[in-house]
Length: 442
Image (cartoon, rainbow, N blue to C red):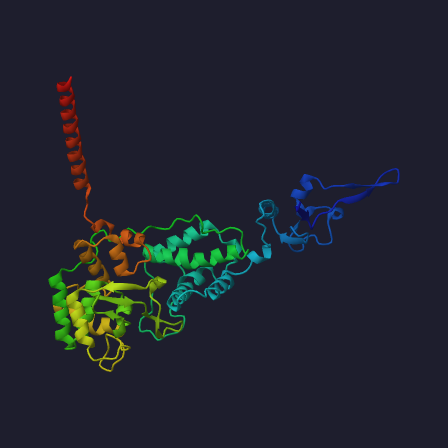
């Protein structure tokens, strides 16, 4: 069985002669040890007063002997207790591994992420640089504790956490300052990005326990004043008409209607090619989207969560798409600029959507992404079930759909209770009829 022990580097037993000519060893008294600075010379080792006083020695499970120095005995005893518990429970980790800085482990974790999209990699990189590394980068990963993480979470919520923005030294007119972090974003920074590096450290036997495991993060309370973004059908048409009046290009109102009626993400809509349209089936194939590479350059990539799907398109809107794409090459993008390139979602927001909102006096606080919620709420109101809305929006599973829109499906409690009461009345009437018939027969 592996074991650990503590040795005093400063103090030794003294050898003293006895009257009969023999020698014996004596130990310093408790009082002498408490007054260590006045310890008699014969109890002092050659290392007395030099460096740390206490040595922890132990055998690793493989038999290798190791040691570590401590200035205080209490720290040495705490380390021995932890060490022996880890050895007994088969969780032994080389203590030197715990001394790696969080930054080194985080970089190794990020380098290991070979299956994620480049846009996801960029988000991890941004959150590490902005919030995680300024706080934890220089810290030994094995020394991170839950109370320290709890304090950091409070700082993130208050907007007082260590940070570093614009690390790549872009030219900015106004220095960016942190604000109180919303629960949803805080969850990603702490649980996903910071936590990803810690989980990697556990998996690679760098640390034995994850200090984040039981940390409680604030919940997302949602908007207490407003419901999900909604637009009526006349509102959508007014916005589309305004887009046509503003740009005089048929592409813009059709794109706006597709976003508001069918609910694709803007990157998915602008990545549609003519060959993706199934005119007869009133649907469009969604299997690519515009994203960015690790340097931030725009490129085509797989859709979010790799969920390819068929997007339902109303017949009137498919007719507009068919007219928009007549006599064009099947490999052309459906929505193009005057130069023939695919519409850029960010550019479209600035060039069209922001101006349309102002000119129409509608959806003034809505983002382009909010049009997905508009499409979903109108589809639910028209009778769409959970699976249809899930497919339309490209959610990975129905849980995400229900978490967002469950309150919009009609409440059937009254309908069910009425049905129960009706069946009860019918059952009681049938029982009474049967009893009366049996009485007559008797």
